[in-house]
Amino acid sequence: MSGAAKLDRRVQFQRQIIGDDGFGNVIVGWADHGSPVSASRTDVSDTEKATAGSIEASLLSRCVVRSTGLTRDLDPKDRLTQGGLTWNILGIKEAKDGRHRFLEITARARTDG
Image (cartoon, rainbow, N blue to C red; front, side):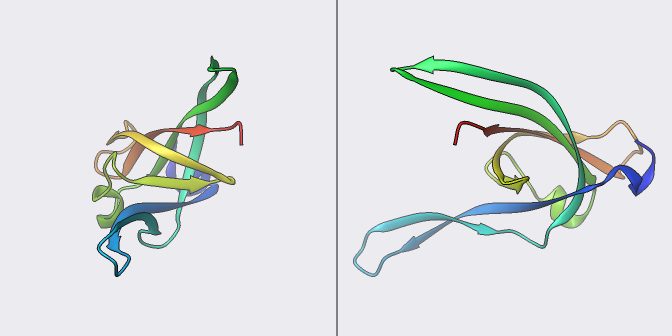
C-alpha cells in the first residue's frame, strides 16, 4: 500500500463496557471507541461450519489503518464495525508498509446473520 489512497473504507472501533443496572446486576455492552477512521480491507478467507444443525459462516479479513494514539491503544478485546458487519479483532501488528505509519488488524466477522 502506498499512502492514504488505499484507505477507502471507514471503520468504527468499539470497546466493551461493564456497568451496573442499579439492582446489583452486571451489564456488559459495547460502546464506540474514538471516531471512525479510514482503513483498507483485504478479505483473506471465508468459512462455513455446520454445528448442531445450523450453518455458521464467517469472513477473515485484514484491515490496515494509520498508526495513531487511538489505534495503538487497541487490543484483541476490542472489536470494529465496517460494511454492516461486526468484526472480532484477532490480532494487531505493525504493517510492513512504512515503519510506525500503519497497523494491520486481523479480524473475523460472522456473515450468516
